[in-house]
Image 1 (tube, helix red, strand yellow):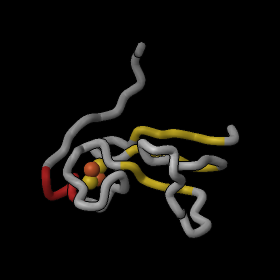
Image 2 (cartoon, rainbow, N blue to C red):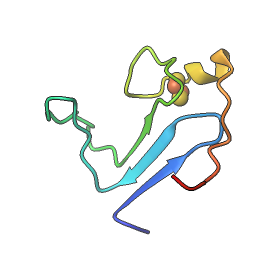
Image 3 (spheres, rainbow, N blue to C red):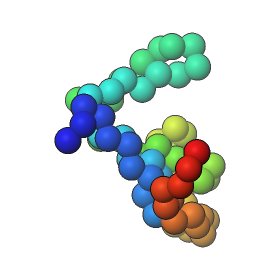
Image 4 (spheres, rainbow, N blue to C red):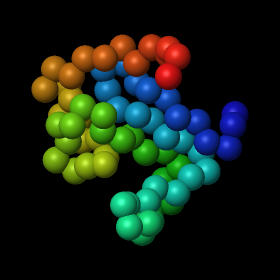
Length: 70
Ligand code: FES
């Protein structure tokens, strides 16, 4: 496994796993409490951004997340 893996989950959040720091716009680091995996909202529906709170399911967010040329 790479030092950090970022996976776009189908119809859901972005999974970030491994060795990473999550920072706010001012460069301050989020306290992760030892977690090595986080799920970041990409639906815009979470009430706890940047974390996914599961609201994408009720909100009907859909995107298969399939890889393509960026
Ligand atoms: S992706 Fe889960 S609440 Fe946005």
